[in-house]
Image (cartoon, rainbow, N blue to C red; front, side, top):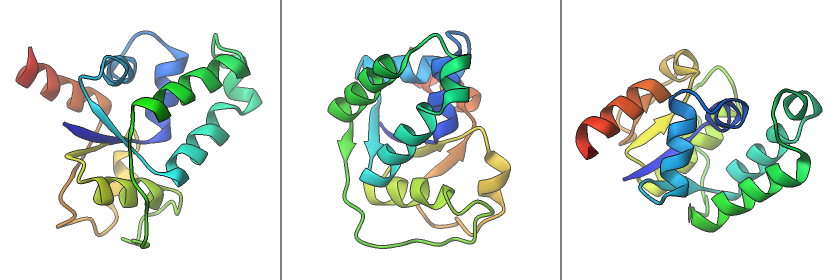
Length: 144
Protein backbone atom coordinates (compact mmCIF):
# COMPACT_ATOMS: atom_id res chain seq x y z
CA UNK A 1 0.00 0.00 0.00
CA UNK A 2 1.37 3.40 -0.99
CA UNK A 3 0.77 6.41 1.27
CA UNK A 4 1.73 10.05 1.29
CA UNK A 5 2.13 11.61 4.71
CA UNK A 6 1.85 15.28 5.58
CA UNK A 7 4.69 16.89 7.54
CA UNK A 8 2.50 17.07 10.65
CA UNK A 9 2.46 13.26 10.79
CA UNK A 10 6.24 13.10 10.75
CA UNK A 11 6.49 15.80 13.43
CA UNK A 12 3.96 14.02 15.66
CA UNK A 13 5.86 10.75 15.20
CA UNK A 14 9.13 12.39 16.23
CA UNK A 15 7.62 14.15 19.23
CA UNK A 16 5.89 11.13 20.78
CA UNK A 17 6.18 7.36 20.73
CA UNK A 18 2.47 7.22 21.47
CA UNK A 19 -0.22 7.61 18.90
CA UNK A 20 -1.05 6.64 15.36
CA UNK A 21 1.52 8.93 13.72
CA UNK A 22 4.38 7.10 15.41
CA UNK A 23 2.86 3.74 14.47
CA UNK A 24 2.63 4.86 10.83
CA UNK A 25 6.29 5.85 10.87
CA UNK A 26 7.15 2.44 12.33
CA UNK A 27 5.18 0.72 9.54
CA UNK A 28 7.13 2.69 6.93
CA UNK A 29 10.47 1.82 8.54
CA UNK A 30 9.42 -1.84 8.78
CA UNK A 31 8.53 -1.63 5.06
CA UNK A 32 4.94 -2.64 5.69
CA UNK A 33 3.87 0.62 4.06
CA UNK A 34 5.34 2.26 1.00
CA UNK A 35 5.99 5.96 1.52
CA UNK A 36 5.54 8.12 -1.56
CA UNK A 37 8.08 10.94 -1.72
CA UNK A 38 8.88 13.78 -4.07
CA UNK A 39 11.76 16.22 -3.88
CA UNK A 40 9.46 19.02 -2.73
CA UNK A 41 7.92 16.89 0.01
CA UNK A 42 11.36 15.82 1.27
CA UNK A 43 12.50 19.46 1.31
CA UNK A 44 9.39 20.38 3.29
CA UNK A 45 10.08 17.58 5.79
CA UNK A 46 13.68 18.78 6.08
CA UNK A 47 12.71 22.41 6.63
CA UNK A 48 10.06 21.80 9.25
CA UNK A 49 11.68 18.98 11.24
CA UNK A 50 14.89 20.97 11.71
CA UNK A 51 13.26 24.12 13.05
CA UNK A 52 14.62 25.07 16.46
CA UNK A 53 11.20 24.96 18.13
CA UNK A 54 10.62 21.41 16.84
CA UNK A 55 14.07 20.20 17.87
CA UNK A 56 13.60 21.63 21.37
CA UNK A 57 10.33 19.72 21.79
CA UNK A 58 11.68 16.44 20.45
CA UNK A 59 14.21 14.08 21.94
CA UNK A 60 16.22 14.25 18.73
CA UNK A 61 19.13 16.46 17.72
CA UNK A 62 19.67 17.78 14.20
CA UNK A 63 21.87 14.84 13.16
CA UNK A 64 19.35 12.29 14.38
CA UNK A 65 16.58 14.02 12.45
CA UNK A 66 18.79 13.94 9.37
CA UNK A 67 19.26 10.19 9.92
CA UNK A 68 15.48 9.69 10.04
CA UNK A 69 15.03 11.74 6.86
CA UNK A 70 17.84 9.82 5.14
CA UNK A 71 16.19 6.54 6.09
CA UNK A 72 12.82 7.71 4.77
CA UNK A 73 14.46 8.85 1.54
CA UNK A 74 16.15 5.46 1.21
CA UNK A 75 12.96 3.47 1.81
CA UNK A 76 10.55 5.73 -0.07
CA UNK A 77 9.14 5.29 -3.53
CA UNK A 78 10.40 8.43 -5.20
CA UNK A 79 8.37 10.36 -7.73
CA UNK A 80 9.25 13.28 -9.94
CA UNK A 81 6.52 15.85 -10.29
CA UNK A 82 6.19 17.26 -13.80
CA UNK A 83 2.97 19.17 -13.24
CA UNK A 84 1.26 21.41 -10.75
CA UNK A 85 -2.09 20.59 -9.24
CA UNK A 86 -3.92 23.42 -7.55
CA UNK A 87 -7.18 22.13 -6.04
CA UNK A 88 -7.88 25.41 -4.20
CA UNK A 89 -6.58 24.30 -0.81
CA UNK A 90 -6.42 26.77 2.05
CA UNK A 91 -2.69 26.29 2.57
CA UNK A 92 -0.56 26.47 -0.59
CA UNK A 93 2.05 24.12 0.96
CA UNK A 94 -0.56 21.35 1.09
CA UNK A 95 -0.49 21.17 -2.71
CA UNK A 96 2.93 19.47 -2.48
CA UNK A 97 1.30 16.51 -0.78
CA UNK A 98 -1.61 16.38 -3.22
CA UNK A 99 0.82 16.34 -6.15
CA UNK A 100 2.88 13.58 -4.54
CA UNK A 101 -0.17 11.49 -3.68
CA UNK A 102 -1.53 11.88 -7.20
CA UNK A 103 1.77 11.15 -8.99
CA UNK A 104 2.46 8.09 -6.83
CA UNK A 105 -1.04 6.64 -7.02
CA UNK A 106 -1.14 6.71 -3.23
CA UNK A 107 -4.20 5.11 -1.74
CA UNK A 108 -4.13 7.54 1.18
CA UNK A 109 -2.89 11.00 2.03
CA UNK A 110 -2.51 10.98 5.80
CA UNK A 111 -2.77 14.32 7.60
CA UNK A 112 -3.89 15.81 10.89
CA UNK A 113 -5.21 18.84 8.99
CA UNK A 114 -8.20 17.10 7.45
CA UNK A 115 -10.20 20.35 7.36
CA UNK A 116 -7.68 22.09 5.13
CA UNK A 117 -7.92 19.31 2.55
CA UNK A 118 -11.70 18.98 2.71
CA UNK A 119 -12.14 22.61 1.64
CA UNK A 120 -10.40 21.98 -1.68
CA UNK A 121 -11.53 20.36 -4.90
CA UNK A 122 -10.05 16.89 -4.42
CA UNK A 123 -12.79 14.72 -5.88
CA UNK A 124 -11.54 12.26 -8.46
CA UNK A 125 -7.87 12.43 -7.48
CA UNK A 126 -7.80 8.70 -6.63
CA UNK A 127 -6.70 8.86 -3.00
CA UNK A 128 -8.46 9.26 0.31
CA UNK A 129 -7.50 11.98 2.80
CA UNK A 130 -7.56 10.56 6.33
CA UNK A 131 -6.37 11.30 9.84
CA UNK A 132 -3.53 9.19 11.23
CA UNK A 133 -5.88 7.52 13.71
CA UNK A 134 -8.38 6.54 11.01
CA UNK A 135 -5.61 5.34 8.70
CA UNK A 136 -3.95 3.22 11.38
CA UNK A 137 -7.29 1.69 12.43
CA UNK A 138 -8.00 0.80 8.79
CA UNK A 139 -4.52 -0.61 8.27
CA UNK A 140 -4.75 -2.79 11.42
CA UNK A 141 -8.18 -4.05 10.44
CA UNK A 142 -6.94 -5.11 7.01
CA UNK A 143 -3.47 -6.36 7.93
CA UNK A 144 -3.51 -7.90 11.40
